[in-house]
Length: 122
Image 1 (cartoon, one colour):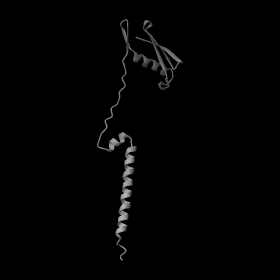
Image 2: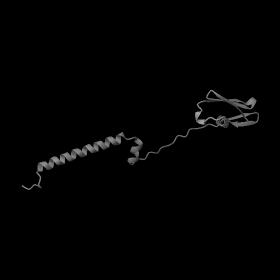
Image 3: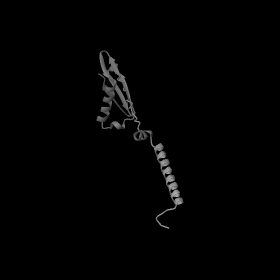
Image 4: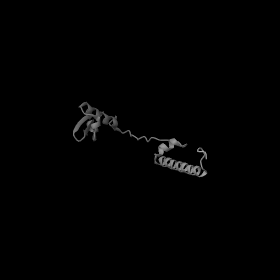
């Protein structure tokens, strides 16, 4: 008998083993795809995911008093600028209270319950 020829039984066993290995690989791939985040899956598939960014609305608050007007946001920025000018960092601000006193044309502020100051309102 020739050594190169194989028995039909051996061929059938080899094909069965190959099919079992292929099934395991397919199952492993399915598990890997299922474990991926949905955004990653969308990149791999035919569907495209559109990501919409949520833009936080920032209100514009204006103070009007006896013919004068100022944006309250500007007042907050001025308070932060004075804090930085005093040698502090903006990133160290944990709290900021602003007190508007239009009858005095002044704004008082307290930063981190320690640093306080006064700004001209108009």
